[in-house]
Length: 146
View 1 (cartoon, rainbow, N blue to C red):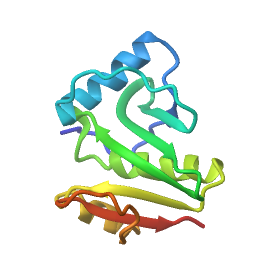
View 2 (cartoon, rainbow, N blue to C red):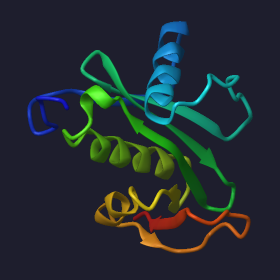
View 3 (spheres, rainbow, N blue to C red):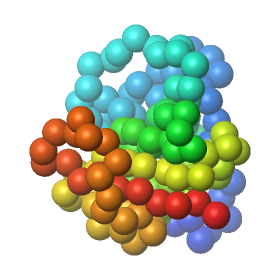
């Protein structure tokens, strides 16, 4: 657990990985949290892998997918385990929502595990089925962005 909190004076930014070291950090965070093998980088239009930086350290990874229907999906939201519990997930979610708005989307949607649904509910997401193809055991959530 991180000993620092977002209330302390830290500089946060959410950026696309720029170099091999950034990509290694992005994949590493996802692997630590989700135990995923390293996939190929997805360069399709509308797919936006992003790293959350606190000061000069990458501490979070997220993928934003533009669904081209005024909505964007936030996928595989992950904070490095060494930094979990310090409010960094809320910071990343807020920055990702700003990114979504800058894409021109008015809604953010997520597939949440039942364990994570409370986190999203506290951030203003409501349970709403937005994907007819979604498998059971996943909570579909949506937030309208102002």
